[in-house]
Length: 176
Image (tube, rainbow, N blue to C red; front, side, top):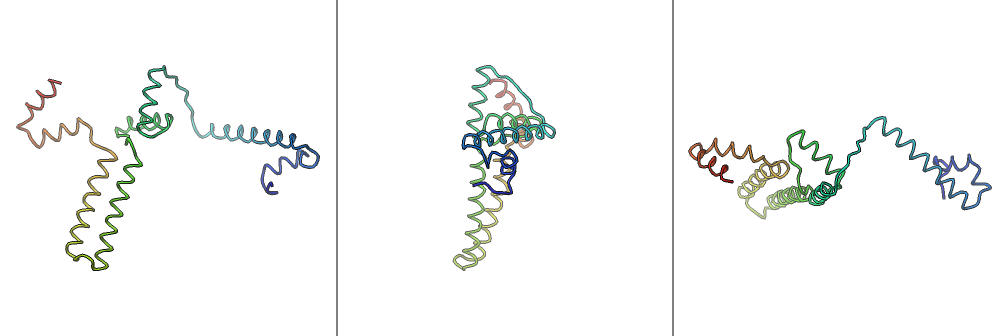
């Protein structure tokens, strides 16, 4: 049954199909309503958003499809995310759900330890040091999982820390 306050009900009532129409005519009128509704929605959407059409050959499409699947994203979402990742010089997490699960597990572990401390199941001092370790892991691991350092940054950091090994690192890179 239709809600008498809905816009589709108003449309069907104003067209007169509810009183005198056959089930087929009502079905067609509903189809017309949704067609008009979607058309108006698209017009409104285009006023506030831009849309681009791009074409890919078979190899390009296969590569994008494969990477989108690996990242567990639709092709469209993958293309948009990679575009902004490139512009912002950031990383696209291959599986953001897994990263969220890791973050959730760390939080749950933290909460469990906290409960054990409150219940006096473990010594306060030991529990506090475990909580600090978990907190530190969370602060170190999650940023790396969400936005790992580029190879260039890692090499620069290595050279900065180990200036003596700079020449051997350069030789290694050149040999590749």
